[in-house]
Image 1: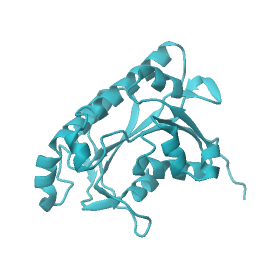
Image 2: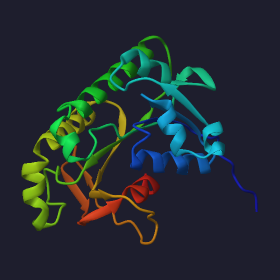
Image 3: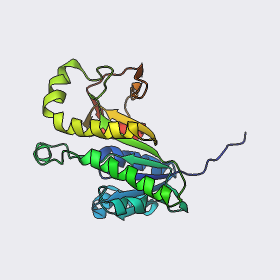
Image 4: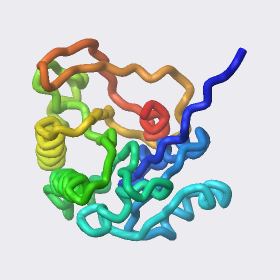
Length: 229
């Protein structure tokens, strides 16, 4: 039986030093995709990768809120007149009490706004392509059903109110855009090796306001989120 071989995809990772995007990056490298990562501190990402993984990923230094840096990494390295095929964005504030006190209340919205601006500018300069944007968000943001356990509602509505407003603004901007996108709303994130159980995932269409399937859970490992992506 003949096996059809597809051309490797080019995937840009934003926030690749975070657990979810790091897991997704490793999965993509194992699948022999062409991977780029924009990080503020390349040495931090290198420390999280094996020597073999380091040799496979194109690491660029820069900030996801810097338009010029985003423009630079959106260009497909193997096709300079085209954009990358996929963008995995998990930029956000660190999940810690210290981070919560010193968070940027618009880190996700600003990052998405700059990303969309960069794509539009490069298209105006005749670059081709329609990158599929995969943005990491959070449960508790659905306008159509409750996707978190009832016991966790007070935590989401009070303690996480500020970062969730930011993620909702990011989601709304992406939904209003003309880009191709997937929003991944993960439950409360944990560390650890994942893969021991099947990932349960609900699905909804926020444009049409349709809930196709529901899934409610307390936690999920960052490793499993990246694997699912």
